[in-house]
Image 1 (cartoon, one colour):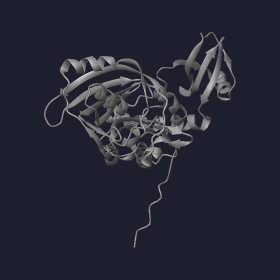
Image 2 (cartoon, rainbow, N blue to C red):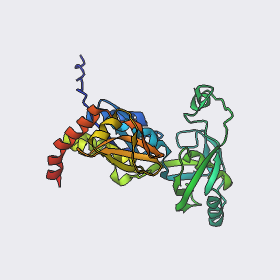
Image 3 (tube, rainbow, N blue to C red):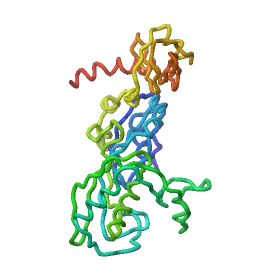
Image 4 (tube, helix red, strand yellow):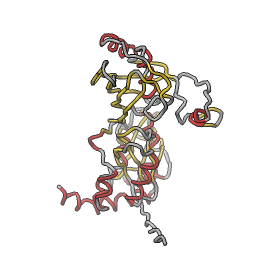
Length: 326
């Protein structure tokens, strides 16, 4: 007879956790595991990673979920291995091999082809993707053996570095480091590079090493998170404002902070600004995002007074712990 499942007592948790997503786990499954370990009431992520990809996955909890959409536009950096000579149905190692060709390209040809993919390029999204056509995900068509027309998309490859290369032997490959704009499919990039080399290929490994300002050095694994006690897990959370690093800070006094939190515009001698993060002066606390136009501070996404109170209370509890760890 199965033992009854223990009900987890959820609690308000606010902040950002940098998770090193493991191989084979979907982004949502990774999120749910971290949410369970933190006993968090509310959680979300800033964009998915394929199950076959590992690496930096920022997870947002509580008030941080209000700003997770801002991070979807961030540039990403990946390290990937392109297996040359074998083309698969999914452009990665999960698919069936659909063609095999000899690898006859030279080092000079590799360098020339990589240069060709630098800068603004057009990409046709892969059939095995979550993009929708007529309300249906492309991977649903692909699994049914159908191929539908996809419009090319404009993306930017900011940097494309060749880390390692093997053009002969049983497993020829290129290992690349790619920094790219949002919406770039690394599977498609790898497949297109291999096709331009005349041999075809697929991704055999993919790791995200940075997304926006967040790098793999700041990540924690689910395995390590599981071994921690609750205060240690909570200490891994970065503050909500870490998602607003590219915003200009503005601090309001008590009276103006209260009005701002009520959604009322405030006037001041500020220049026009598209991205502003607003703080209260006393106590020092994030109030929300805004923009400035013609001297008016116009509210965007706001924290609730309860969220602000919970963050301040949790911060006062964590200070002695952090001092002990130091």
